[in-house]
Image 1 (tube, helix red, strand yellow):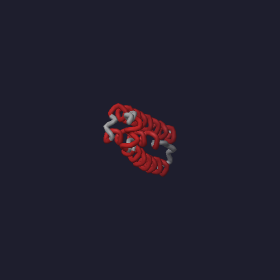
Image 2: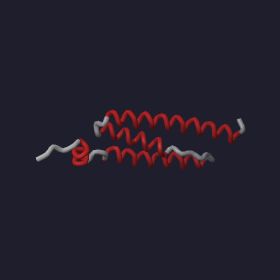
Image 3: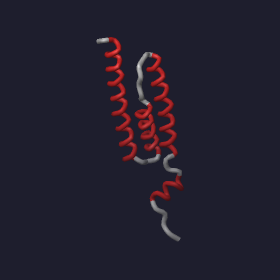
Image 4: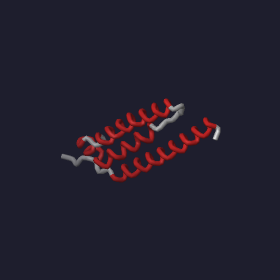
Length: 96
C-alpha cells in the first residue's frame, strides 16, 4: 500500500468546501453591494474582492493559514480599491 500525496489527502478530506462556501457567500454579498450602488447611479464591481475575502475566511476554517492570509489581504486591497473608485465616480458625477 502506498502513501497518499498531500493533494490526494486534501481531496479525500473535502478540502476547499469552506473556501467554496465563503466565495459563494461573498459573491452574493458583492452582488447586493453592486445592485445598491447601481440604484444610486454608480457602476461598480465589488464581487471579485468580496468573493476573495469570503474564500479567505473559509480557508481559515480549513486551517489553510497561508492561503487565508493571501486571499483576505487581496480581498481587502480589492475593497479599498472599490471604495476609492466609488468615491471618484461620485465626485465626477457631481462635478466636485
